Image 1: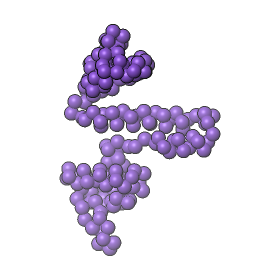
Image 2: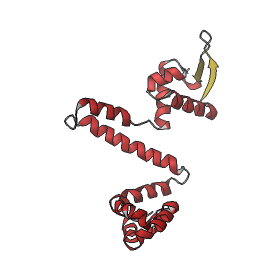
Image 3: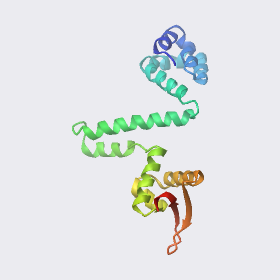
Image 4: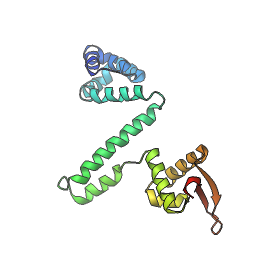
Length: 179
């Protein structure tokens, strides 16, 4: 586990050379800091305010060694979006309603694959164990690409199999355990 105290110490003593970035497992940013004097001093100053969060992300990546860094960061970003979405939903005096509504819609968090899978299972249960991509989109609110990607992953895992609807010919995912 990375230490916030040690990170601040490295930032203070060798931050312009990127020592704290190397310590946090970000060697390319460390090299950038090394050759640009801490990102032309601007990055070094910004780091003063963001180091606790950077340490938290580095520790999260260490905990999830099997998970790719991009998916861990994406999951963390979605959690931040959820928190901001909740704040905007609760505060009715923060800004004009139209602006708040469009901002809420822009940052509405994307469900994780597990949450989307659970939503698709519930939708399939409502539809008698048979679910098309369109029905999955309508039930979960996720995009066509996301629903199709998760359904294909479920197909590869053996949770569902594919068939065509006898009357319409639409591709339908059959959830075996829901019959």
